Structures are given as structure tokens and as C-alpha cells.
Image (cartoon, rainbow, N blue to C red; front, top):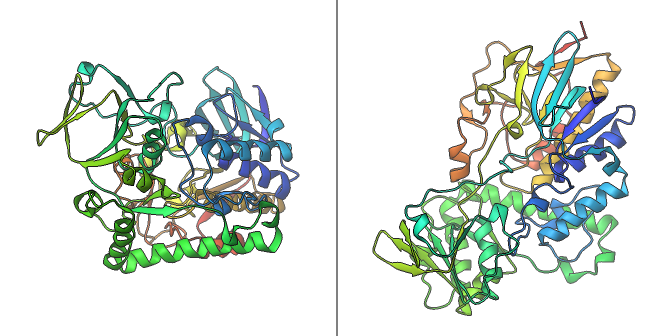
Length: 479
């Protein structure tokens, strides 16, 4: 066995570094390690290198609460976010806790020893009492690829944004970006700056929201500290929560509001219908954020265009739609989404019984019925990822400290008798990447703590002040 610690954190991305900081400051008596599959810190923000990659959440809430964002730009590039995560890890000495190149493939729980034993793809094993999965929820090795007919006939390059080739030169080229999500919203304007023309080809439209620019009052970065930084963060949290609640209660009104704002940004030759008239309600899918409105600027400049239709096939010179339209292309970017997975595709078993993620019931949005001493860090679907990730890490620390005080070795969420079985998906989104993974994701019940509310304002007191021993967990000592 390579090493044994109290807590194993899997993943050194945004969530993993947050978890390490909370463990080091709130559980100083606990030993921990981070196992990272890749050779660097940053997770998503290091993996994705496509042109224009930026946050689709404001950095005042995406940043860590313990290290406020000081850059006056609310929307940051992927490289800037990656550097922020790495700098945070170095500042607090968390990088010394990371073991790189350790991709965990299996994890086994043994009740007699109250121990998780994990195995990496290199054959190394690590042991801990508690396992904290900060792996995110998508497959790092590959995105979602659609098997378009005629791919082999296309004479140009076909690339997926998740693994952007370093040698791709699209200057002066005709580019077709297939997709209309957050990736396309940043890819299109970035590529349009040097490409001959970029066409965003979408099967169905999405809701777009322009966001960006300097922070409130354009204060210099050095002034965004202390009470002012907390005020900006609080204001943005409240604004996002209010928009989401309004969208759920008055979807038609919010839809009209969003479309009116988009219509003001469009050139005269781009109609709002059909290109920006979604067939779903706001927040049935996550809206596409347009950083600094640059997507609309590219449309107005004639450097980019939008086509709504269905791909029939690729051909030598581009793409043909089912209505007979041909779109010429030298480069095709298939921004067709992510492949969602549970638990980082780690094969879990409890005392030899395989854990079926699709049959689990989620507890407090982070632990699972019948699975001891394990938490999975998943951010909000309707707000900034870090808000929920940090609450989860702080609750894990509360739980570990409670276990220490009461000499408890094992905590297992257990559905009380008479409680309704889980019957709803973990994520209430109609997005393709969520629907494709519905059978893999845990389920949620009708009431807390077996229901995920996706509301930071109510989760904050619930996660930091609620009783640990709430009647929904079973405690035990090592046999």
C-alpha cells in the first residue's frame, strides 16, 4: 500500500483545492491527500483549451470565499481561472498534498476496518477512512460525439472542443460550429476574429444572456477586498437566485424579457424567430452566457452567422441540412456537449457488493443511501459551481469533527422507514447531456434531506447549522 490517510480527496480541480483548504483549516487534526489523474492542477480549467474559453458565471461567486476575486473583470478566461486555482493551492501549501498521475479506477469499502481502499490505473493502492470525490460529473477522456453521416467524406478538419488540437490553424478558413450551448457562445466570437467566417449551426435555439464587463462601479482590483468584496459576492448570489425563482414562477414573462434583450443585440438580418426562440422554458436548460456581448458583436460585424436546422450529412466541402441547404466549411467544430458520468467512473463496492449509482438516493446533495463515509462534490445547476462545492466541503468537515468528538468511525446515510422512495432525477434539466446520463445518476426524494433544492440561500444555514445526527444517518464504530 502506497499511503494511508484519514481522508482521500479525488481530483485537484476547483472543487478539490477548495476541499483541501477546508480540511487543512477546519480539520487540522486529520491527515489527507489529493489524488489527481492528470499531471497538473486545474481540472476543467486546464483540460479545456479551445479558443475563447471563459467562465459562464461571474468570478465574484465562482472564486473561493476564503480568497475573493480581485480582478475587476466579472468574466475571466480559462487560463486566468486555471492560474487562480494553482496560485491558491501554492499559497496555502495544498499543492504539497497532491499525488499527480494517479487515476483512481476502483474503490472498495471494508466494514471491519472502516476503510476505503482505492486502486489507481498504475496498480498503486491508497487507504483512508473517508473518501471525498471531487471529480466533477463529466468524462475527461472524451466528450459527446455525434456519429454524423458522411464524416469520412469531409476534406477538412473535424475537432471536438474538449480536446482542442494545438496545430489547428483556422485563420482565413470557413468554420462551422455545430451546437448552441455555452461552448459555442464563446467559440464563435473568438474564432470569428481571424476566420473568414464562422457559422453557428444549431438544431434548436437556446436562451442567451449577456454578462461581463468590470465589476460594480469599475473599482480597481485592489479595492475589491473586505466588506466591499463580500457585498459584491452577496449581491450576485441574490441576483442569480431571484432570476432563477422568477423563471420558475413566471416562465413566459422571463422568456419574453430575455428574448427582448437578445433582439436589441441582433443585426436587422438575423430574426429572433427561429434562431433565438427556444422550445423550452427558461432554466429547463442552463442559459448560455455571452461574455461582454461579443457573440452578438460578431453577428453585427458579419463575421459570424446563425443557421437553425438539422444535419443530414457531411460532404467533401461542408455540411448538408435536411432541408437541402449546404454550408461550406474548411473546419467543423462539433460542440455537441459532454459525456456525463457518476463518481468519476470509479467502480465502487461496499463489502464486495457493487454500488449501482443509478439506484442510490442522494442525502444532502452529497452522500448516498447505504454508502458509508463517502461524499461526492457536485455544484449547482442554476448558480455558480463553487457556491455549492464549498458548502459541501464545509459540511464534510463538520461531519468529520462530529465523528471525532463522538468517537464514530462510520457514517452511513439511511432512508428512515416510511420515507418515500427516490423517484426524481438528481438534476432537473432537459439538457441533452443530462438526459443521456439519467440512468447513471443517483435519484432524489420528495423532502429534505433527501431532496436537492439548488438554492444557496436556504442551503447555507442548512449545511452549516443543521444537526449532524438528524435521524437520517446511521453511526457505528470500527468492528
